[in-house]
Length: 306
Image 1: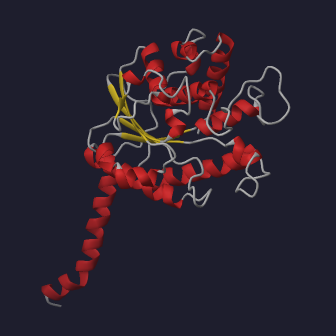
Image 2 (image 1 turned 60 degrees about the horizontal axis):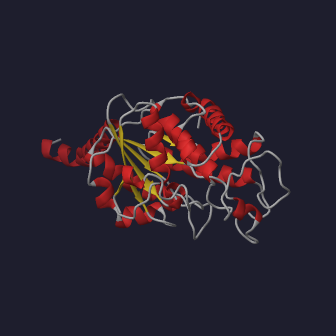
Image 3 (image 1 turned 120 degrees about the vertical axis):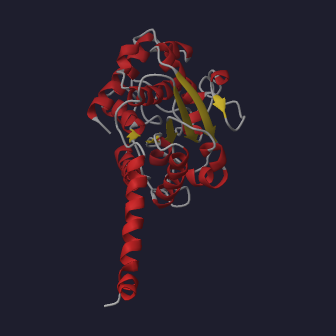
């Protein structure tokens, strides 16, 4: 058979082979490592909404001057709490945020990608809308696609960056206060299972270093008897308030727990090593016992895995 004919026959196979090799090389070039960030200065970016910037004082504007807010809105929030925890542990981190209240990752992918991918980051934390999809609660399809777009843009700029997904928490208002809603009349466990599955799906679909199990940690606080299960139910003496007054966002204690889980997973440090005198906890007005309770829950969750 003439060589030209052979080439024409095998050209589609060759092209497919080369494309597959290119995709494999691209996937292999990014960092899927679940290990802590390496020593030395680290640049960390947080992308999400009010589940990261916080809903009200003392979290919303907490040390806003120590976080580079790419949107210029002046939020401190959980990124600033993470910065304080890192400082307390003697770690060098520069923290930036790109946070817009109530929005999805699709919004950030559509409108904020130049801000997100315009700089070189060592770690990027992505947080999706608390319902996964506000129009179709519990559906992770749009989340998976948007996280993939952002992750690819980040890795195009710096293949060694680690991209994490921050798993959000079951909302008491959705379970106890939203008649006809997706999780109405169910349990916190049921909603958290849907969120966990959605984040796991998004992690499998892209070059993701790991899921930060914040939602699982908040559920653990309830299951371990540290925090109240139903903020509208009978008062549980001695138990902590996990959610704020809207039964949606976390309380100051819950936000401290959120920051501890992020800190522990990204740095590899045991949150309990920060001790009862944790500066971030004191700044939020928490007692030593409340600080230690949050640290213990975070430690147990991180030892348990994602």
